[in-house]
Length: 421
Image (cartoon, rainbow, N blue to C red; front, side, top):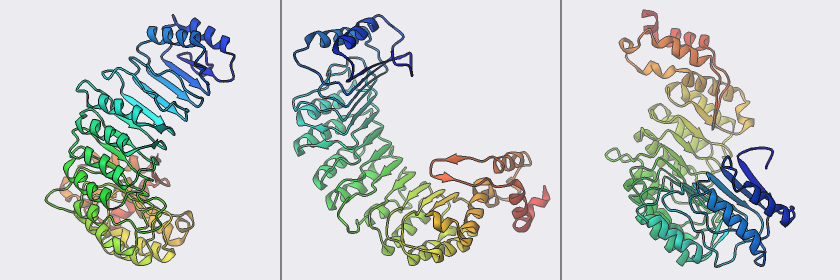
């Protein structure tokens, strides 16, 4: 039994085969085991006894919470009622197929694998099954070998009604493959998180993205960072920004990541329009693009009209301390942005410290200034000031500890109505 968890049975490739068989046999009747982990085991097709013992173990433990196969070569393919299945960096036979109960599997991770048509076709069929309950699929860093395999997988996505999260990051998908996947997800009834970053999308994929955003009411998080990975040219995301700017039909999207797409200052005009019109988008990642001080100036000119945005990631762009000064001058007009991420060398400047001071005020509750004086109840003040004295480190929102006294001083200087209470 693995020392780290009494509920996990772990088999390792360095162990003697006889020892592996004995541990599996001893664990068959141990009902406390909920997880099986197999690391770096090379399965010998001639060793039917080991496979037989494993099959007996899986037969008895049909309600395992999680099975992990990491490294090695080959391995079991029948997982029955497993709820969470992960295969990572396993060398698989091209004819390998995964068999599982469609009404039991909730999470499937196939990481750093070569995914053949023989594997993805039945997976697509399982996704299309009305009884399917799978909610999360992660294929990060896996290679889908043929367009036919992508099409088979996409057909399953199109008919599926349970999936909530799909990650296809670093799958080396070309434009047609990406477009096929995106088109299949248009109008999906439950998908909320989609990551297609670090692929090789072009015009076909981008044209499908706009339709996906508009037609899919459940989509709240979209990562299209490094969409044309390795191309070295700007990815034209104007249509994406425009569809997120339509006041008459604002999509549900709250998180948008477009880092690493070589976006230049010309794109900032479309981004600014999106951020001033769209009140639902709260997190925008523009990191690792090519925005200079001119792009930052355009952003700063309209910062006060961006009432939905909370987190803006501008790390690894091409603006300097002048750009930070522009943001520092503009941020007092905004009461909602709580974090603007940028390079450490810029954060530590005088303008960077001023910027962070105002961001901390926003995080601490300064946005209450947007409310009519009569709507601010006395009972709210303890909560506001308590939060100001509570330090937190949320993902993408590292803050210094603001002080309640800072906020009170700011209110006294800028909000005379506070004296009424």
